[in-house]
Image (cartoon, rainbow, N blue to C red; front, side, top):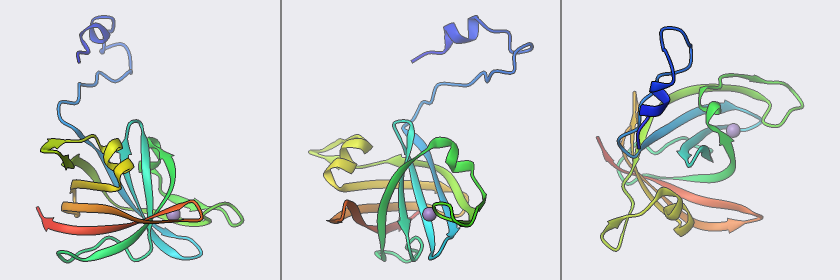
Length: 163
Ligand code: MN
């Protein structure tokens, strides 16, 4: 991948377009949002192929090693949502305040047959290993799909090790 042609066509002292750079690793963003909806929960989101794959985690992310928390997969959110904080008005879907607890990048480390498998494939297979590199939340976590009920995929979010 190269942005050479993009850069050649632009004078960044004149345009406010981003200069940008090619992402060299397989780091993508993650965010944890505390959502004071009818039931307080934490939204955990991972950037996957241009969207945020999302889970509602009623009790928050696991903190202790090997601790497991239920994570219910919700609809994909736009990447831009990772910056969202504010109050969703009464009567609207998810009414209540949303606050960013942490964000950063993550690295997919899911292996299958001795090689790295894509995060998308891992989600499909129901086993995802990631390393979160947040400001507060750091370390390895695993998501395991264990049940699908009424169209909702229920996962376990497991703390693997600290960074
Ligand atoms: Mn939510």
